[in-house]
Image 1 (cartoon, rainbow, N blue to C red):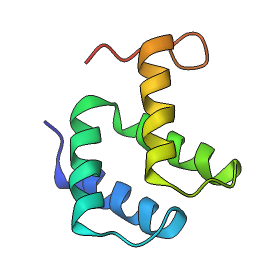
Image 2: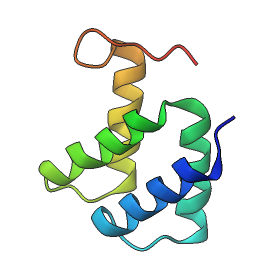
Image 3: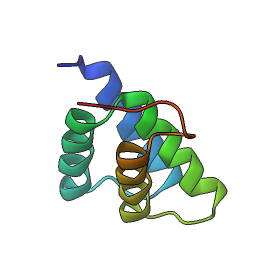
Length: 79
């Protein structure tokens, strides 16, 4: 289990890049942190912003794809 620091970092990243941090989105971020590596979540948020799709659903789709197919064809997260 991670410390509060990754949550705080992810919450801020979401607020700055995706949108307001509602209680529902906070819960989804916490759940995602349990499923995926924190650096993956931050990178998926960045990828969504670069793609100009500022949606938590899009971030989740990126994460699911990386988990199923490996990230960049190499790194897998077997949590």
